[in-house]
Length: 150
Length: 263
Image 1 (cartoon, rainbow over the protein chains, first blue to last red):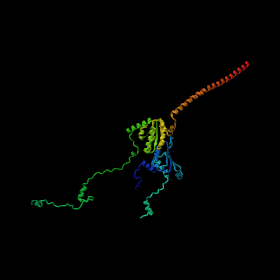
Image 2: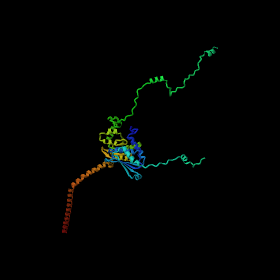
Image 3: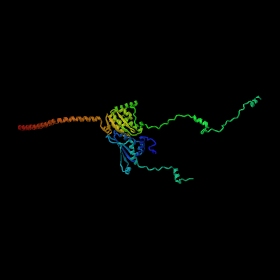
Image 4: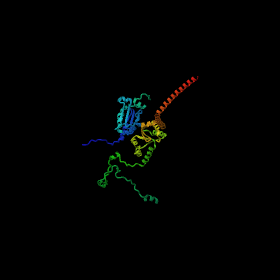
C-alpha cells in the first residue's frame, strides 16, 4: 500500500511573494475613497502603514485614478481602521455603502487578502474592447468588394 | 654521354606507391568489438575509482528562517552615523516625524528643497542606525515609528521651534508625506497638538498678555482692599460738600438779611 502524494512540488516563496501576489491583484475600481485611520503608536500601526504604503503605489492607484486615499492620524490609542467608500454604481449592486476593515489582529497578508475578497471582487467587470482592424484585414475578412480591381 | 647514362641507369628508381587501408575507414563513433582476448585484457585493466559522493539536496536550515543570534557588536561605521543622528536629535528644537508614501525621487527632492529653504532638513534612517542612536535616551519611543518593512519614516529637523507652521504648510503641498507626530522643545506632540501649537500666537504677544493678566490680579486686590476706604472718603466728601453748601446758603441768607437790615 502506498501513501498518496500530498503537498507541493516546489517550496513556497515565503510571505513576501504571497504579499506581492495579492498586491498585483488589487483593484480599486469599485472604490471612491479610502480612509486609513490609525494611531502611530498603536501596536498594529506598522501593518497599517505598510498597507497604506502598498495602496498608494502608482500601480494600484492607476486601477482607479479618481480614487482618493486619505489618512487620518489620531492620538487616542484607537484600533487602526481602513474604510472603503464604494462608488454609487457598486453601492446599488451590493447594497453596501462602505466596507470597514479593522486591522487589529490581522497581518499584512491577511489584510490584503480581505481587501481583495471584499473590494477587488466588487470591481465592475470590463467589457471587451472592440479591436481595431487594419484595411487589409477588413478586405480579407469582408470579401473586399468595395475597391475596384483591375 | 656520361650525363645520359647517369640519367637513365644510375638514377634511383622510386616505386610509385599509394598506401591504402585494408578494410576501409575506421568507424570512430561505433568502434568494432574487440576480439575476445583483447576485450578480456581491456576489461581486466579498467581502473576502479572510488564512488563519488553525490551532493545531497540542500537541507532546510531552520536558523535561516528564525532570527539568528547575531553578534551584538555594532559596526563602527554605524556608530559614527548614529552619533551624528543623536546630534541631530539633541540640537534641533523642532522635529517632525512623517510617514513617507512612495514618491519619485524628483518629488522627494522638491520637498527637500522646500524644507531646506525654510531651514529644515529631511532625513531618513535605517532601523539599526536609529536604534543605536536613540536607544535608552529620551527619544526611545520614536524607535517604534521606524520599525518598517515597506514604508519609510522621515525626520524633519529644525533648529527653531517656531517653524511648525511653515512645516505644516510645506507638508500640505506634499501629499505623499503624512505627519505622524513631532517633538517641539523636548516634548512629544501628537499631530493635532502640533496643529494647535502652530496656531498659537507669537510668544512675545502671549507674554505681554500674561503680564497683563498678572497685573490685573494685583490691581484688583488693591482695588478690593481700598474700595471701602475710598467709599468712606467719597461719602465724607459728599457730606462735607453738602455741609459746605448748606453753610454757604446760610451765610448768604444772613448776608442778605444784614444788608436788608442796613438798608
